[in-house]
Amino acid sequence: MSIKKMKQNKKHPICKRILLTGGALALLGCLCVLSLNLWVTISTSSQILEFSEDNPLDDEEKDHDCIVILGAGLRGNEPSPMLRDRLNKGISCYQNGVAPKILMSGDHGRDGYNEVQVMKQYAVSAGVPSQDIFMDHAGFSTYDSMVRAHDIFGLKNPVIVTQEYHIYRALFIGNNVGLDCTGIPTDYYKYGGQPYRIVREYIARCKDVGTVLIGAEPICRGEPISITGNGDITNEER
Image 1: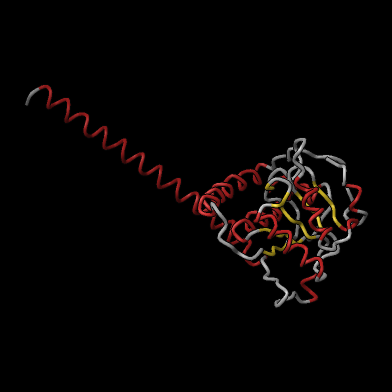
Image 2: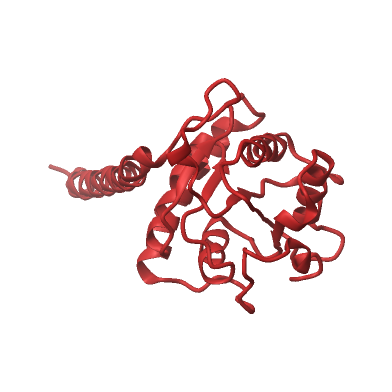
């Protein structure tokens, strides 16, 4: 056998081992992502209620201290389609007596972008009294929103309003930061970019499992604000 062939034969087992190791690691990673996602969804699925004008909640299902509407971005000075659907569902919940207060939680981290103010204005225009709407200006992520709902606003048993694909993670975080929360999903539509958004959500669930386990701090803290008071005190809060 020539020296050249002997060298080639030695390379083949090494390349094969590298490929097998890489494949095994990739499979392990996929199983880990799948397992964590199953944990998040299965552990929270029983907390989700369906609510609509034609399918109202029973009286015992209305014993909540607040409706939390999570931000989903703006288009100019208007809610994005996803955010508009969340707002409409949250406003409907309020008008049907699900909870006496609304907490708008979103991004107001820079000048010229005040997501929660747009959210509040939308609800006020729909007839919700301004004093019943609180704003969390530092809801920079789902994790931050849920931690601050508990630690800053003192919520105990809120209703979380967001799209169905996102609600499992919000509930999972809420469960692990001291909230006894219920989820009401918005009606499902095929929003633009939804496949990408779902893939990103799979990854975000894994990330937030770790975030919950280490008990990470939110980006901002601040002074406690009682949800039983007048929501207008948060109009200029950050």
